Image 1 (cartoon, rainbow, N blue to C red):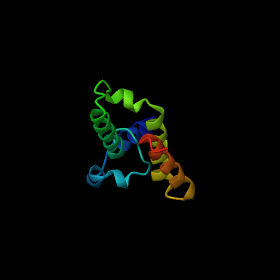
Image 2: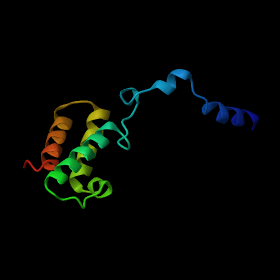
Image 3: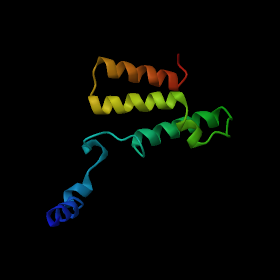
Image 4: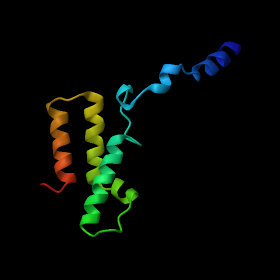
Length: 101
């Protein structure tokens, strides 16, 4: 039992270099609070402001199907790497997001 307790507490310790990990260094891409999420929200809010549609908030934008598709394609692209399939999904998601289709 002592060994399990020690291992548990040791697992929470971090090295100094681990504090300096950037988004690009992560083992798996996480959408929440990522630069991609912040950038797409900022872009969509600017588009909505230009359209004089000021009632839209961030939660509503994040809940739309277009943003969900974009999120899935970005996460897939970052985690699986760029191949023909992931790039095609990303392209289509961006086109739908910006109403270009």
